[in-house]
Image (cartoon, rainbow, N blue to C red):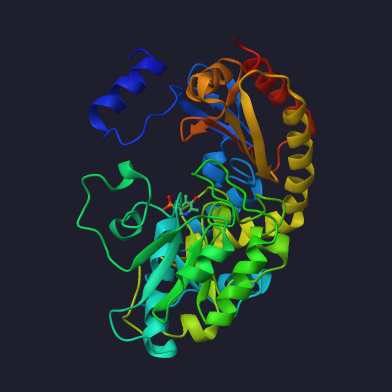
Length: 403
Ligand SMILES: *Cc1c(COP(=O)(O)O)cnc(C)c1O
């Protein structure tokens, strides 16, 4: 049989796989650290990091070893029985991030769903909001995942179109405006759910002081502050959690993506005993949530973040990247924004969209993805070397100087 080529894989995928994505036409077969290799043997620097799931770099040897070793022992017990990894994972994660309790799930959106359920039950059982009346405030431009409840409060028309009827109980305000939050709160408000920086919206960073103002307002009105740190967390923005930039501790945090270093879907919700204590046996669950393989992988992924000082690395390399990008003379660039190694290059309307720049970057050996048509997102694994980063930025500069 003849070896399969790029176009053969693409043809199979187009035929048998639902077209819910529009990927760049590169077929990856191997990866290590910040680099990936395609089936033609070409190599690329990964500037997407699987939407920040591989902060620790692809196939980190320590995390791979933890996965293999645990896979040879026990992978799944279900929560009908206990396993010897979950208690240690729970303790280590809570101690690292400073919370009393956690609840493990698998994908990011499941963590968000869990936070919504916890907030509603807390509102009825603890805060005393009348049954069925609890309201959650979220932000325009939000991205919290793709379930029917979560897309119910998306402001992105395409994410909702054709998927109604929608879950009620959500209200949208603009992101980055604390006064608007204060005005939107009523006696029925249970929680404010937001991203500390909006990733999918095109790397939107709120004004300095926003997180502190949100904390103060939520405390004063006894509204749960829920930070979705699935993308911003685990060192991406230069701190372990993005809320650490303003020394703010949300009532609930959702994490996922890099929680496992990209080896396995692992997510979690962290909160106080007052909040997560509302769940009684049978209220909520997941067959795979908290399984020993996930817990062993996540424990090692967390240790790698700490041992390799990856948040600090993201802060230093992020400053280097931002300074370089801001020096680029290009007729296409409107703004460069971001925090740590999560940066968006916002293009002018007349630049013809970000996709063509991402295609050109691919030809030069850098994989990046447009977000929201006019933004090139640059988010390499946090382990990227300074030399590789500089080389990739040479390529970014070259494509931004194209006609
Ligand atoms: C990716 C993401 C999610 C959803 O995570 P999945 O694992 O894709 O379900 C939720 N919130 C934010 C902020 C994200 O970036």
